[in-house]
Amino acid sequence: MGALPKRKVSRHRRGNRRQHLALTAPSLVTCPRCGSLMRNHYACKTCGTYKGRQVITIPQPE
Image (cartoon, rainbow, N blue to C red):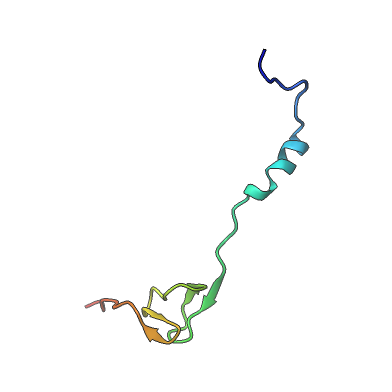
């Protein structure tokens, strides 16, 4: 015999067990250089700066 549950797990108990699996939206801050929204501790995708330094060269649209 295998390990089988003796009774049904209720929706409430199942949901309580899975509480930590919920996804959270990433926290966004405004870029000090260009003012667009960016993620914390990431380089800005709009202007390419991080902590006041240019780290990514962003091609300018023609």
